[in-house]
Length: 507
Image (cartoon, rainbow, N blue to C red; front, side, top):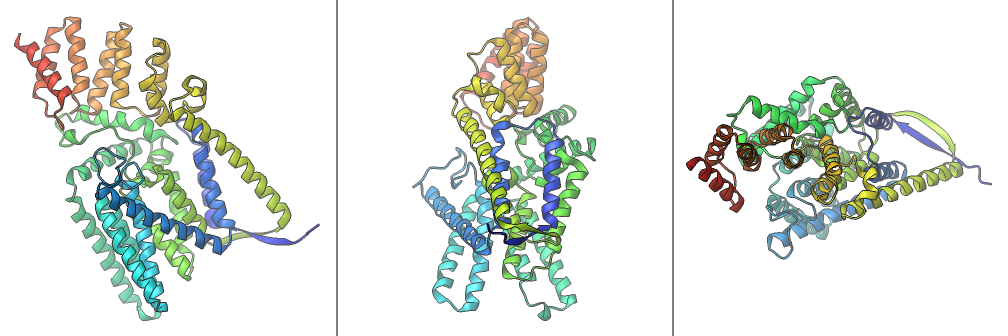
């Protein structure tokens, strides 16, 4: 039997990531969701595969990511030319994603990789490769322009700045000139952020509203946060409280159902508080402080910089393909070695194979539950396994019309506990109204109206409730409010509600 042994290195960022996993498992606002287990399983497998795999395998994987970016850029061109359909009703270009933001995140990573390859092949004097990569850079840049992702452009600028500052010969750059170059680079990034703010001012102001309310959440529980899933379960209540206290806020017309905080650091602080932020900064310190002078190390740090800057204005950790990209990136990087273990190679391979088989089995079962429920099949049988999945529960709550009234209310309560929305609160109010509990129905409609003040439907439901109750005074006040309320998009439904309210107060 082969008794050959080998070294297993435990690095600093391995330990920090392990601590982050333990924190996310035991400090929770909502229980672990069975139908989502396939995601952390695949994330862990991707990280471990990159950590323990050969350098050649890592290079092949990053080449695959680059090809993926080229494909997404080409698909974006096809969508712009109306040769392919977009995946979003309001955006022309989304790539294969649901909206332009994840497309921008991927292209920002691949664009920096392309620039790095351009200069690397330029040093080698490979003319045809230089021309090919130059065309790819131009194509990706135009696709990124089509995506209209401001966060992605700032992230690209940060990544290229990192390559410029740390890719140069250290002997050619004195300490004073290096500090000046860094200061000028930071100033340029801040100027870019300020100028891009006016590109989509309403969108930027909407994110400021989300950040403000998230900051209130953090201030209430600053040390340990609300636990995993806490932001999703609590944010819309904070937004409703904000508009209740500030009915004339300039953010009124910008409010909507919010599924992301548009800043991953705020997300971590809301869920895990200062403890979570300390773990995050410890991880980043371990990776950036390690002196890896190779070209691969330089590129990985530049790509991590791209990901971090993009995370300040978007939600890459909520997009599973980008999560896997981060896992591959972290697994490719190095940090200070804490320990080196001598292991028997064949035993290690057996343990790794058993672990891979176990994780694959869990991931397969979990993904089967997720796909079956998402397809709208076997809701009742699979309910115990996806009842903590906000996405699936939201869909189930809107489609369970054939269930008994009591069961429908329980499903709605579970969905609202995970991620409340204006629509879920209106449905909750409808159920209470059907059961004759008008006080609770009114409370639900008012909560829905406070969440999104410019939305007319919850106000119209309040108007109908007061009118059917015979409370003409409050019904009249609500009718006037409906008629005078500004709307973002005036469709047939809005016109019908305004006409009904106008007829009532003219009687």
